[in-house]
Length: 392
Ligand SMILES: *Cc1c(COP(=O)(O)O)cnc(C)c1O
Image 1 (cartoon, helix red, strand yellow):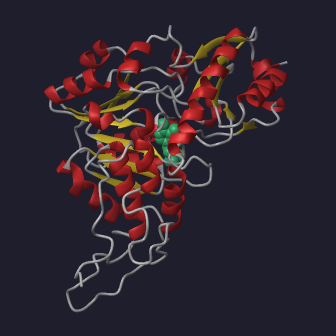
Image 2: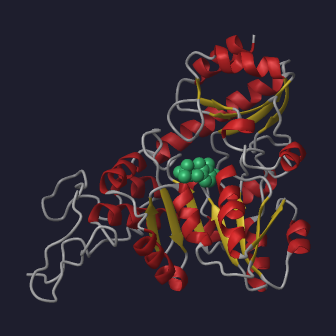
Image 3: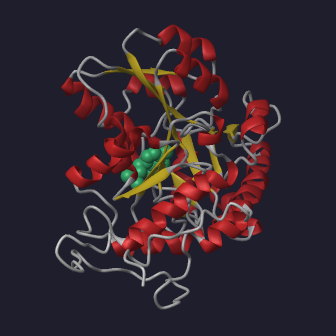
């Protein structure tokens, strides 16, 4: 009989293709009972086999078998060494920034999720850490912002909500040459379309609330590391901050992940059609979508990603048109968030980017005519018909 637990031995499934890996996870089935749906271990604590001999599990704040199955699955999908599942995307970023110390300088995308900005400015700046926001779609900006005390580069690509694309290989090379840590928020494209760790990133973070879950029914975050350099750091963060993802929520992500490939394909093809349709609409002034061939980052996207995802932003001719759109959509829902099966329209000025200072927002183009849309997996004809009637 094996001395250790049933859950130790898992296969990295290196022989499988990505679409099969999402379905079969790390262990996939429960090795003890054969249950095809991985069990939800709704347990806080675990009985010891005998004095000083545990099952490998002690207490769920440290590790829980359901969470571990999710973490191993995410590590497989991102081609990383190890993953950590936490209670939100914000919690994931708290753990990442948790490695900074007084005197460090961090370079972040200037166009970035408002909550990440809030963590930097409202929590970590008070601890003596300096943050600088630059447009990294131009390498020169990153080079110019670098300081002797720069410790970390935090990138979103494509950015939220302006859809700028940055060259991850080049940023990784430059950051490492100068002794920094390169972190990529991969929420928008997921490992289905892009795997930053294979392009040189050290750490990937996700708001798993979005495409990883895919169903707008759970708040969760994921961190994946390339090698064991930061393994102890993240174990300590989960253990001390107590933000590990709950078993039920971990199971919801495992369930959502099974259809990740199918969902991402449909988000991608629907978004392409909607972006092209929006571009021709007389009330739409500008469309921000990484999949346009004349998008500044198109060639870079092609070199590092296999798709453009489901996110589009656009500017309307007036605030009145925007209010009409939000009030008149029927199937499409006016709500914040993204990455779920339902198409959502969002007003970044107040819903996702209110923390960003007005001058930065204005410079980026986040104004009262600016809309972000997360294209769902509905029939694209219904998405376009709804936009058409709501734009009037
Ligand atoms: C939503 C989001 C976050 C924050 O994640 P939560 O799960 O809401 O805490 C971080 N980064 C990006 C790009 C996001 O879209």
